[in-house]
Length: 162
Image 1 (cartoon, rainbow, N blue to C red):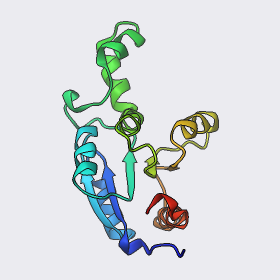
Image 2 (image 1 turned 180 degrees about the vertical axis):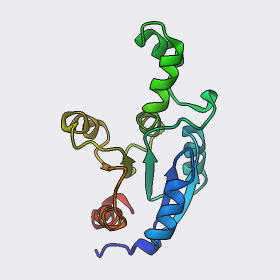
Image 3 (image 1 turned 180 degrees about the horizontal axis):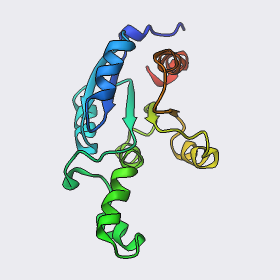
């Protein structure tokens, strides 16, 4: 079976701004791009239509606290009772909370590209791959060519895109 062309893919970009959407549309043409601004919006989009790949930001500091995934009470306990530090933790790791929400909602096999540099955290990435085997990552300063290469790699493994 031959790999599908990128033009046939729908990529859901999950971010709290518009940078990834604008840059991917401009510099990585081909796929259809949709956008979600929170975990809740992501699950709604996945329920509404077929999505081939999720492109997920890690940090969400521009959405209301009520739209963040994760348990603020538990995060506050984990942050020695500091509620502001807990909010910052949820914002800084929101991509991981959304990734977990995808798995719990039955989308664990969906390929996800997480915008976070794991080059110095190889054990953390390996641990995440145990739970999310179709997870890939890109550093913040990624080139359009590298993004295209990653998307093409996902398409080459098209048993996930049937």
